[in-house]
Length: 224
Image (cartoon, rainbow, N blue to C red):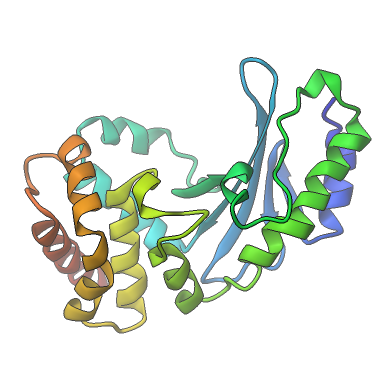
């Protein structure tokens, strides 16, 4: 079973504050990078656990980019977002399997005690998640994380390449990187970005170069 009160108490001990049932925000978040936890159950009542990161400006910019340059369905998606807690960069605990000491197990909520489930979650966060993310607290470290082609966020299986590109532009621009420097950050992933854009972009952008140019122009206008 899921013991909400016990989960709240124990997660507070490792630096996470309950916002509402199943959603936590790290108390060590900074104005530049916020960290979240999301819990839930799937249709078969298996426990689900995810973590998310966001820079507020990059998050907003990425959403706006999908509304403007993505398939029309993204306009509906954007309206349903909970801007107070949602992160575009969200990952299942299982995405850490290749960099963790242990894998996060699949457990059915009715088949496990509340204390056992809480300990499982807290121990995994302490031993496997925090070593990966607790140093990501400023723009430089978040940019390095979001650009890197490695678990938990390899480009090949990125949830949304266009949002990721937009966030890279926003983060790098906040750090004062030039348009050419930003373009070079993304160039190694051009083929993967282009393949995904064929399915989720609208007809206002027909390639990676055009998309990045438009994003750079949008960021400049945003800053005026």
